[in-house]
Image (cartoon, rainbow, N blue to C red):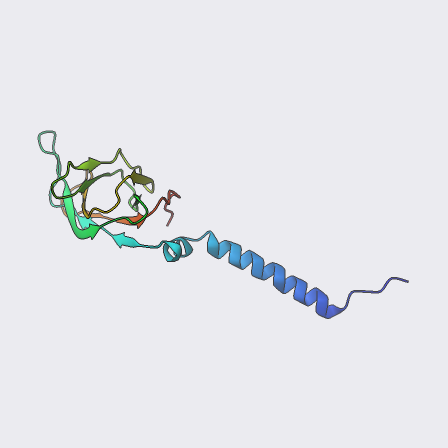
Length: 144
């Protein structure tokens, strides 16, 4: 005759599986990604004026960023495309490609310099442009 597993063992196993599922879901979440990022900056801006075919408008954040890892990753938290400009005094400006809505872009070889983040988007004046900058490469897409 087979012994039935003790009820305590079954209960502990169910709780262990539930804990593993909860921990896995948390580790996949945006809040976990933000918590594990060594350094992050909110470089969100309000568009100063609308770009036209004759005028390309870049709005600069008042936040200075620098990297200890050598890579800065920009996370576009908008539902529209942006272009990011990194400005360092005495250096040529570094420009990203187009960063799609919710997408990321990583700038490499940016160690030991302090940058000002500028953001361009084809949006109306006074539109909030939301961007987070991470020190390191973190290119998972942003989801609401």
